Image 1 (cartoon, rainbow, N blue to C red):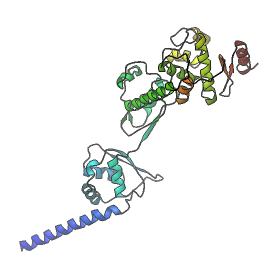
Image 2: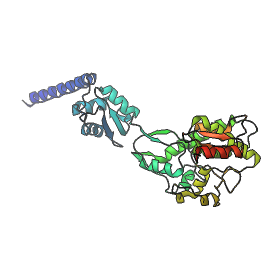
Image 3: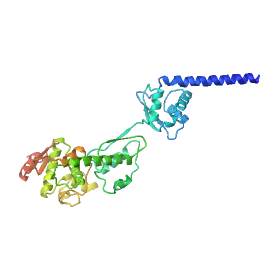
Image 4: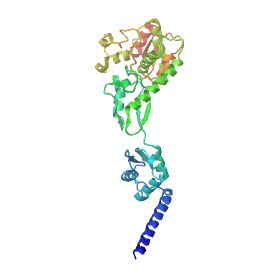
Length: 336
């Protein structure tokens, strides 16, 4: 009797295995149905670190994947790739098939978040953007003056050392990794610009080109004016004339600047006051973009302009003499 029972149990177990095997073979060929929130066409699922196969299945099910748990478990287990599944946050679209799901998890094709550093930003604005970026871990010192050392670069002033661009990261990414990318990008862009510089510029090093580019970036966002403004500053440097540019004064004021630049500010000496000091300021004053870097090393040729004034429409009027400049100020600033 017991032998008969054992045979039946064995047969049922074998049948179960065969059915499971058939299901594991058949199921991946079918569309994987997802339950998505109303009016959303993407389901986000999160795979925790060090998840077992069962933990992966549990995470998928909890986040809304409507698939038979047993089949999903055995299919992942016998796929041969379950050990390659990477933790992270993934975006699944309706109709994704089991092979597509596994391929996404094994490749680590996670949701990419973006943080954008804007041309002309100073280091405080960069710090704010990194702190506010969603799902980005701010692993940098609170004092930006320590940032370069924190990313294994020679200690120094961090202003202008990071290239403004949009950088991608996955959930839990580090702000330090963003800065490493941005610093490497600035190194590359600056070196490329320096290698294409015009001969005879009053700039001795790529560092000086970076400083000048940061001033150009703050002086205008109009593409047609950058090379002309660069030429004005280059012409002034050549003859030893002070740059007399407001953005350097504002930078030197730091947190004291309240949005209103006063005459006393122009007369108060700081290392960045280009009204009281000749030559370039000691460091960049912002992050210059590619166009400003190019303008700094390729200023407009054959111009004797030493002055410029904003027209009020985003462009500038350029003058070669003080008399012409004063007339332009009367016209565009004083409206007389």
